[in-house]
Each structure stands twice: as C-alpha cells, then as structure tokens.
Amino acid sequence: MPLVDLQAAQIFTGAKVPEGADVVVMQEEVKRMGKTISVATRPTPGLNIRRAGSEMAAGVTVLEKGRRLDARAIAACAAAGAGSVTVRRRLRVALLVTGNEIRTAGALRAEAQIWDVNTPMLTGILTQPQIDIVAVEQGIDSRDGLFLQIAELAANADLVITTGGISVGEEDHIKPALSDLGGEIHFSGVAIKPGKPVSFGRIRGAWWLGLPGNPLSAFVTWQLFGTAIVVRLTGETERVTRRHVVTGAAISRKPGRCELRPATCVGFDGQGREVVTFDAETHSGHVRGLPEADGLIFLSADCDFLPEGALVEFQPFCRN
Image (cartoon, rainbow, N blue to C red):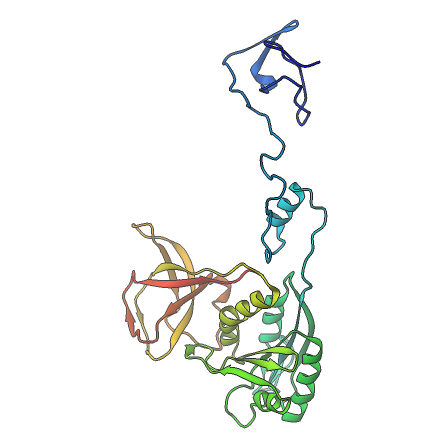
C-alpha cells in the first residue's frame, strides 16, 4: 500500500523506495517507540534517495571514443550496465636493438663490450595494455642482415622500433637497409639534446621509429616521440600534458639545441610553485638518475643560463 502523510515504513539499504515516500532517514537517526518513530530534525525531501537515471541517463555518452579502459573507465562501464564493450585490437610492436658490442645485463663481457640497457628498458616501457610486443631481437650489424630482419619484422608489426645504427658512420646500417626495402624516411635528426639522431618513417606496411643507441637518448626520445606515435596509432584521445615548474638550482649550458633534462619534483616554494631538481649535466649514456626522476624539463635552444627559481616547462614521464 502507498504511504500517506505522516506514515513511514522500514526498508533496507538498496531497497526500492515505497510508493508515496519522499525521503529516507537513516536508522541511527530514528528514535522508535512502539509503532511510532521520531526524528530530531525535519528531513529534506529527496534525502538519501537515489533516483533512476540521476547519474547516467539513457543516451548519454559514458566514455568517449579512444579512451583507454583503465580501472576508472571500467567502473563507469559497469555502472552503466555495459557488460561488454567494443575495443580496438592492440598495436603490434617489434623491437630491434642493434650493436655487436652489447651483451645481456650481468653476462660476461669483453673490455670493449657493454651491457644491453635498451632491450630491458624499452621492453618495460612497451609492456602496456594497448601494445602487443610481437618480437624483441638483437640486430645483425650488417646491411644485408638488417635488411632481412627489418623486412620480417615489418611484415608482422604495425610499428618497428630500432635503437642505434642511425647516425652517419660506416657501421650505421639501419637507414641504408630501409632504403633497400623502399622505405620512406619522414625525418631524421632533430635539434634536441639528448637524442639528435632520432628518425621516423614508413617501411612497407609498418611505421618505423629509429631511436638513438645511447640509453638516455633512447629513453628521452621515446618519451617525446614514441608516446605520441602510440597514442596516434591506437586511436587514444589522452595526451601527456606539460606544466610549468621552477628550477631548484641555476643552470649553465651550451646553447644550440633544445635540451630535455630529467628532473625530480621535490616540493613547492613560498609562492606555491612546484620545484624540480636535476643533474648539473646531461649525458646521453647515463641512466643512473632515471629511477628518481619524475619527468623532463625543456631548456630552449637559445638558453645558456637560467637562475635558480626560473620558470621552465615540465613533461611527466608517460605511464606504462
């Protein structure tokens, strides 16, 4: 029976509101005396009632196209009653690390050999829900050998990533091998530090991103170019956004190229501005400071000195 004026009925959390009722009062706020109840204050109509469609009405867009299905997005889908959704397939990525001198980290090595940083570093970066790593290989340092490897990788991947072998030395065979494959190089060489040799192009049906061989250069150029390429190829709408921070120390540097320097967020100054610290210099092969760094600060090409407290752009490292 519907409730009428001055009538109440007991219900439990999540139950349907009785017909005629316009407010729900929590049990701990009710004083009961036999079949009569009293409350200390007059409740506002609609209190503690969740009306159908009050959060998501029929026909509204719950998630925009291109949104990654993380835990928050999945929660919204479930709340909308969407037990299944249509998604794009994962981006197929192949990684080819060049350099006859590299050896697996921790393995025995000769005096002129170095441990392989790029393979585990980039594999870790690429281990993401929207990426399917179809191959991870060490390159054969010859034009013919790389021709065969790149041809096979390009046939099975949407994006081929290489490290090293893209400068102008006699042993830099990546770009000649691409030329033999009929590849197109859209750009090669960018006025940044570190990472000047970074290159991008097309190999038959696949895209190609050529990262420098030095590990910090490879990491920085991935953050700057690789993340943007993956976003575009997967159809994502999310972007890595930059913000302004202030320097925790003065910077003296050689101008000429835009420098991307790893930096660590350490708090705020007296004006509420975020402060970052950083190494005094950037070395393309040094990665010891990366675990503590939160992102990159951008130092313009014409800048040779910045005082402590100078305002600079900061791009946080991408999530993976």
